[in-house]
Length: 345
Image (cartoon, rainbow, N blue to C red):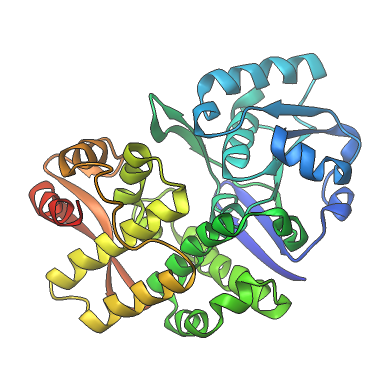
């Protein structure tokens, strides 16, 4: 097991990489805990849960809403949850986002921790303190920033995932390497298949090194005033694709990374060979690198991008690459982005 400690203005988060869900009692007072999960995770892993009340939420992005949070608040009240309680989110990124938001806002904040059960959540979504819900289909428009007290990354829980879900997790892992760690990126070029096949040293290093990048960035800019925006590499267009096309998050972000790399290359800050390296490692992980034919038009994607929280009048702040392992946050004009979207559509 490896441990990372993320210290920020809203608290300290202990990230336990390779720990077992069986040891949850070491990190939370189970007698004062409540678990939030979904039906699939409960069916697959419920037998491993500690004895605590369970609040079950619906499946999919359609349940990541204020209505769901309101139902959780009412259940908290019935269970007499108080500030000395701990909310434990066990599930994928939707569960951890909703659980973290509900805990952060109930009684002005109760402690919470996560046991992420997908690779997307272990390598990205459950770490960093962003907790939120969607509004009218637009991702994460309502939310808070508050750190979970602990995050347990149990790799055994990933063995029930379909291969497509594992690939989606590698989208975030590759993103972290691409923006901040050239050596890690080179490791992934040689070891993606080993990690996807659950070779212990490879999967543990992949998750650890990805989270080390994220923790380092978040510790310096928790509230996303500057450097943390680098973590949005691939996400600006990725979120638009996710909404308009319905692709899973990791696949949409993979295409979004290629769009951002394309902008970087056209601006002359990223070499064509590095665009090709990015494309090759994404394909190794089983991820798409171009838009599905006929699924969405540029105008539709552009409208969704315009709803992004990072928009500034006639431009949008995007994370671009100036090399493998080097990211920068730049303004991209809506017209410039429209040209790229016309190309990919």
